[in-house]
Structures are given as structure tokens and as C-alpha cells.
Image (tube, rainbow, N blue to C red; front, side, top):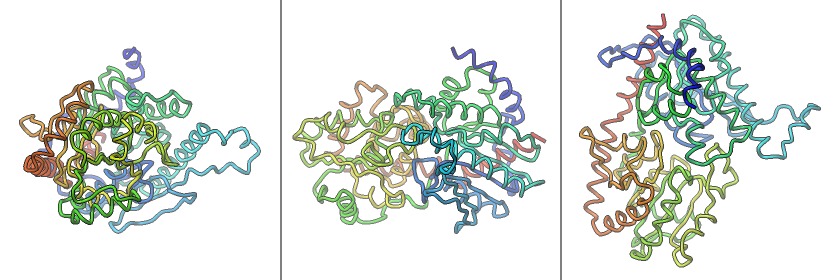
Amino acid sequence: MLKRYSLFCLPLVASLTIASYYYTMAKSSTTPDLDAFICISSEDDIYNVKGGIGTYLAVLTKEIKRIYPHMEIHWITKSHNASDFSEIDAFGIHRHYLSDTNPYQDKPFCKHLELSDSAGKALLDQEVFLNKANAKLSEILATLKGKKVAIECGEWEGIAHQVFRVIDNKDILKVARIHTPLAVTMISNKLPVSTTNKLQLIHEYETLNNVDCVTSCTNYMKVLLVEHVLGDCQAADQIRVIPNPVDSKNYKPGTCSRSLSIDKVNALLGKKFLTQDTYNIYFIGSVETRKGAELAMAAVATIAAELPQARFCFFGHHGGNASKNLTANTKLAPEILYEKIPVQYRDQVAFSGYVDHAELPSIMESGDVFPIMYLGDNFPGAVAEISLMEKPILALSRGGVHEMLCDKNGELVAYDLGTSLKEAPAKLAQGVIELYHNPQQRLNIGRNLGALIRGKYEPEKITREIIEFYSDCLLKKN
């Protein structure tokens, strides 16, 4: 089945040969051959926070502007309300916010769109935003005529596919940055093949099929991209693996006291859930199948029976939120998850819903252990952030998490839960109980994780690698 993709990959092969795979960090320049950088996403880090992409782009754009102040930076993203607006942030980055609100409501044909149906509304929202994003991209490029520009568009939703298909300019580099393609998410989250998802699959492929180079945060996702999207073609060999820079400035231990952190969590939950004596087990991120939410719940009874003082708290979007369809990643409802554990332990489990990203460092301070049960993720920001806070992680050694948390010798620095999904709940219970009885081990794991992540993904180092790679690709295009 994968072989049939080969025919469609021919344009991609021709395009990607422009960006030589034989890039080396030995080529370093203080001022890269770029005048401007444009990034595009459907989320940001302030108004419309959905996941890791907005956080990554915030760190990247700030670092680019700091390291290369001459460079003009534009970020096209989705508005959090019905307004289109632009602003220049404190770092000098031009942010363009575009609303996905229905612009056709006064037109006669609009009655046929059946917007009372959630699937129909999701489809319209996506198309409205994509059309606006491509128009804004064209508008910005017109102001940069004659300048050397790199455009980075995450493959998610294939936002730039319209412009990428038609633009062919030696001064413009078109880049697809791989986060987690919908085709991969659909498998792990068992998503339905809705009309919206069908179009998104096409948009993502069209974006990938019309770029000059592709980068992936991990080798793991590079492999999945080839398997589930591109098929086995020559272009796959030229995908460059470059990790994300991490937010080491805002995430660091000592953000606030444990007492204050406990008070914040209790206020967030609206009840006295934690005390100074509870053993706090924190799950950071959306409550999804692919994030291992069911695996976590399967371990609750064993842990709670052994440790009555244990408290399990899930911080992130869940199916009970009004905004549960923020992305195609289906969110699980707490009510359904509670049914998976005996009644007597349910008062030891809480779901906070979405937490302002800026509040996470202070909330994490009261966490004692942080399980990462991801079935297979790319470069999850939560893993980096927990590590930067020097908190102990118990991790399934799967996907990009394994790449992130291994040291130069290939040893997992986190508490290793192995790779088996079948054995995961039992191993999680064993690990959480073991670490409860060994505070020094928790401390050591946390410190080692902090040192590992700060060294591997230092923001300036990674940002320079990304920008210098783009600059080198543009030079080769000429």
C-alpha cells in the first residue's frame, strides 16, 4: 500500500534535492544569509494555546530575534476571538492573528453549510483560517520582495499549502517542520475519517509535496512520516532531524515554594485536594489515548491501595471542556476515566482542565513524580519542561520521549518503565511506590534530567542550527 505513494513523491524528490542533505554544523556564520523568517501555525503561546507547537515557535522566534536582530520575523497564527489583528510583541516579532469566524453568514448560500452540525462548523472554521493565512502570507511576501526569506510551516493542518503550491522564487525557502502528522494521530487516537480530517490529510500532504526542505524534531517522527504519509521514496532520505529548543529561561526549579504551589493547585481545583503530607502524582498535557491516559488510570488502584496519601492530578484539556475539539486529538472525559477505577479511590484523582501555560512552573513545584505514559509522541514540550524543573519523570521509553531522555551513552535518564503497553500500568505502580520510599532517588533523577535537557536542547545552540540549516538550503537553491 505504501508503494503507491512513490508516484506522488516525485515532485517532492525534485524539490528536496535543492536542500542538500550533506549539511554540517562546521558551516557556521554569525550572520546567516536570511533577511526574514516567517512561521505559520494555528496556535500561539499567549491567546490561543493548544499544545507544544505554539510554545516551540515562541522560544524559536524570540531566540532568532535575540541572536540575529537584523532579521525581520513574522508569525501568522489563529486569533482567539472574532477579530483579525496584528501586533509587535516585546521582542520585535510581528504577530498576525486571523479569526476563523464564519464570514458568510449574511450570504444566501450559507444556509446550506449546516453550521448547527459540529463537524460542518469545524470544517468551515478550518477552511476560513487556511484561506486567510495563505492570503496574509502572500501579503507579507510582497513586502519582502527581493529579500531572502525562510518560511517555516508545521505540517499540522497543512496551513501554507495554497501558497507553497504556486510560489517558485529563488529568494524564498519553503520549509515543512514535522510535529505529528494527522495520519499518525488518527492511528494512535483511533480517530474517525471525517470530512474535515480527509481534507486535512490532503492539505498536509500538499504542503509536504511542495517544499524545499523538511525538518523533523525526532528521528522517530521522521520514520512515521515516511510510513504513514509519504511512502517509501527518495525524498525521505533528505529529511533533516533537528530537535526543538527548550524554554530554559522560564522553566527552572525554585519558581515558588511547595506550600504556595499546593495552594495554587487547590484553588485551581476548587477544593482542598492537596496538603503538605500528600504524595502528588502529576500528569501534564492533554488527556488523550495517545498520551496514555487509560494506562495511567489502570495504575491508580494499585498505587492508591498502597499509598492512601497519593493524589493523582491531570493538568490539561480533557473531554469535559467546552473547547474539547481544539484539535483533531480527541480528548477523554473524566467521567469515563473515573469509571475505570474502583469508587473508593476516585476522590484521590482530579482533573484540572486547561492550565495557563505561564502558570505551569509554579504548579509543577508541588509535584512529587511525573509519569509520562505516551504511546508515541514526537518532541513533547511537557517532557522538556518537567525536566527543566528538575522533577523526576517515570517514562515509557517510546517514540520521541526515548530520544529526548537518553544520554550520550544511550541510557534513559528517567525512571524507565520499558516499552510494553501491556505491562505499563504495573510498572508505573511499582515505580511510583518505589520512588515514594526513596526521596533521594527522586531528587537525583530530577537533577540529572535537568542537566540532560539543558545541555542537549539549549535554545541558542538549537536555534542557530535551525537558522543556519535554512540559510544553507537557500544558498543551495541559488
